[in-house]
Image (cartoon, rainbow, N blue to C red):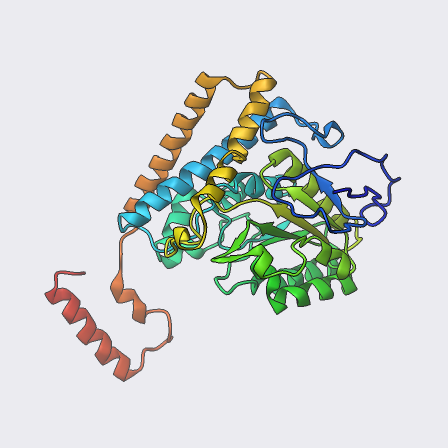
Length: 388
């Protein structure tokens, strides 16, 4: 493919020099004219820098912090899956394989910015300030878990696919009306991109120049529907151009590429130019949710091919090449993060005390007589069963 890097729609700065074409594995765009859509990839699968011009100039301490964030995302995801299989958790959406997409999209955000996540954003939420035990409470069905942490500008996620995107656009319009120095970042999957509500949000944001960044995590599958069966043009970034906003397509398994793309998008929105679309091409290595069996609809060979593109292994190779990590350091970091996750699990277990009698307490200010009778009968049945 031969994407042009015109920059004419993405910045008021001068256009950068032409760069060699960038090939993003899994991006089927050879026959698509990308026009002004830039394609970003900084690291290849081996951790080699293939686009030095877009390599973020981050301090070594920040690179290691990003790495720890990715490890924390994976370790927490793995622990949640084990807990769900053991009956301690409800259904949730694993993010295995999307750690670079998760951390890269929120890294450029400030504390004053707003995040409107989809349900597959647990790693990003931890980075933004959620404690792991609170997220465990949330996914275990305790209403206390849904409370947004103090000082974290975030909207609750919605299980209804794509329904949070218009709401995020509304928040962005509120920011614009109040002339606040903030942006909204909202993410959703390639399946949600087919929802009419998302298209309406695109159009509204583009017309009224809402300060919002739309991030479509194109992970290959909308539950069991592959991208080629739900979109006539699988280059979802092209939809941004169609609605009148700039867009980039980025290798979503390259955390440095994600940071570059999302920094560009957030800076654009913050400068008052309006919305920006980022398509992150990644892969869902695990289940759609824990109620799903992907072996029914996709082949093991496909999954194994993407295992070689693992975002964590790629970033590890890069950090090793810069002498910031070695095998001993990797083992130490993994053990430290694992202990963090276990400690959060233990705190969750202390907090996760079911109170079934509470189901009557938050509907009416004064409980009607018929519900008072039902409550008394219900509590008596619980008492007979030994449940308090």
